[in-house]
Amino acid sequence: MKANKQIGKGTRAVHAGVEPDPSTGAIMTPIFQTSTYVQEAVGVHKGWEYSRSHNPTRAALEAAFAELESGTHGLAFASGLAAIDSVLKTLKPGDEIIAGQDLYGGTARLFRANHAPMGLVFHFVDTQKPELVEAAMNDRTKLVWLESPTNPLMQITDIAAIAALTNPRGILLAVDNTFASPMLQRPLEHGADIVMHSVTKYMGGHSDVVMGALITKDETVDAALRTIQNNCGAIAQPFDSFLVLRGLKTLHLRIERHCSNGKKIAHWLKDNPNVGKVYWPGFEDHPGHEIAARQMDDFGGMIAFELKDNDLDQAMNFVASTELFALAESLGGVESLIEHPAAMTHASVPAEIREELGISDGFIRLSVGVEDAEDLIADLEQAMRKVTN
Ligand code: P1T
Image 1 (cartoon, rainbow, N blue to C red):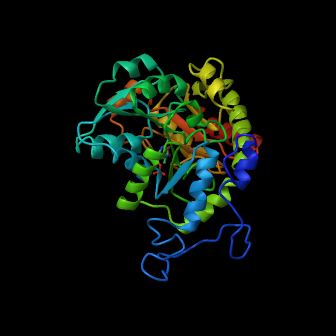
Image 2: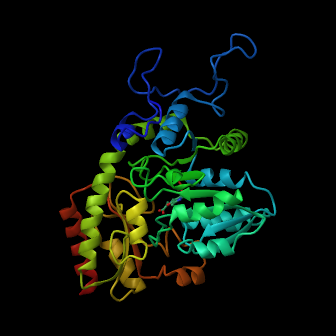
């Protein structure tokens, strides 16, 4: 199915990337579990040579990613971090990157621990304020990297406002769209050059695959990324590609439920006297609400909050006390998860930076799944009783 703005997001989710198999008519793309393809004579083949370079199952998934994100080219990687790493590998020592101040801990660690020592220069900036992004730009700036909403503080950046700064200067804008998914936000429509996903999360949706994606509509950017994908080899595997193709068919339905459950739980938390601050962009008093309402189709199922006392022991007890919300890293699957960012997903962020950003020791993150909201609320209620007596 060709990218077509006229059709709805749900129709795209069901059909993206998938054509009946030409040899059998199979409606599902087969798992081409093969490393290589037989050639009739040297260079005479059916377009497939070696599975690091191309694989039909992965190609179908890559086409689906492109369609869902309103792009023209998609690439599937072994993990979200492998996808991010591939973008940075297009740069050279001395090149400068403006990165969001609040990022998944592993992304910031990749930047600081692996790419800074190789000569890339990072400026971590509050991208909620475009004027700060502009002030950090110079002739060596090649890339702006941001998340919106951010992990874990749920900060919102105006993607179009940042694109208005990067596009005229020839600086690439890459947006990690993991928290929103293309059902809620399509950054290429707002002027971004590259969209990245930890497919591990909503795109896969079933907590059974680790994968990353990059999407663009720029031929030159695609060619550079495709070369890195082939030369460095951090590709997505055929079976995993099949699982994600399967998962994408219900992305719109899952996201609808994540959003409606998220809304109920966010409001329940806000109204609870034992809860302090609640971070969710659907609240009118969230600093990024107006932008989120404009650039997103809904507010998603990721929520962060602090208990009233904002205390480490209480938070640790709380995350260990839920029964339906499983205590685990990751997010975006059908089952609800709870975690403690300072000790888990963002432990690699230096304590003073966490403190500066507001990722306190009492800070808790929820990935609200697609179960019945009443059961999820009852679970939070019983955990709350255990830690507030
Ligand atoms: O885990 P991986 O597929 O390599 O993706 C890394 C990644 C990138 N970007 C964002 C916004 C992410 O949330 C992640 C992974 N995050 C978690 C594992 C987590 O629990 O937050």
